[in-house]
Image (tube, rainbow, N blue to C red; front, side, top):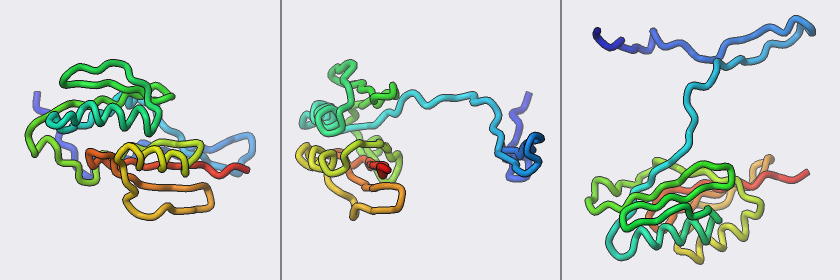
Length: 156
């Protein structure tokens, strides 16, 4: 069988409106059951010059990720909520393209100390800290050039 060709017209939004009978006033978005969970992000890092070890040290010491395992070519770290951040040592430039994707986003309790830790470990701010009504937002670059979003929620 031929794979189904998806077009803009054939793909329908996955959120539908549901009417609440009890109140008669409100509709809420309803999402179908999730079929996939994000459990791991893999970042490519330079294998030369101790790149993998430096990357492990940055994510562990600056952001507090737990180290699960480290080999010569692979490292696995874990966030507090169980998502794995894996680091793969590579040697070719096309594999190291960091551009603007992916962006790892972390919610932190103390933006100032997190930024200080990241800078001390070789990271740098990629623009000014923003102060929207809901908290603080910052974008950093890891020593390998990966984008890291930081968010500190406003306490009430």
